Image 1 (spheres, rainbow, N blue to C red):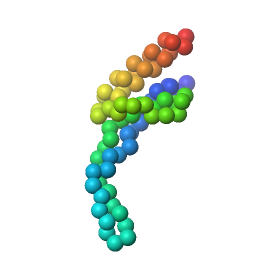
Image 2 (cartoon, rainbow, N blue to C red; image 1 turned 90 degrees about the horizontal axis):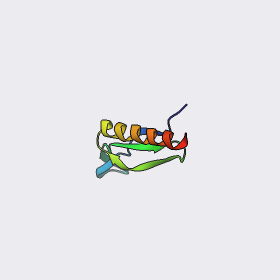
Image 3 (cartoon, rainbow, N blue to C red; image 1 turned 45 degrees about the horizontal axis):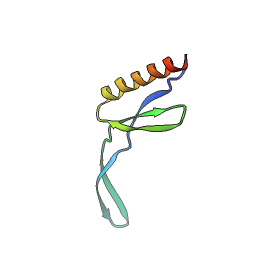
Length: 70
């Protein structure tokens, strides 16, 4: 069975953009990690800067969800 909550990479954050001819280029940094709800099909906020932090919160949420549904 698939877990309800899983960790996904966050959307990268654009730091700066520049134009070269007709093309635009952007430099980005990692946005960290988000928790994704497989049931509601959406990303939950806030984002977490480290994967370990996100994993801990995700584990707690999955445990709480299983406890509420049993």
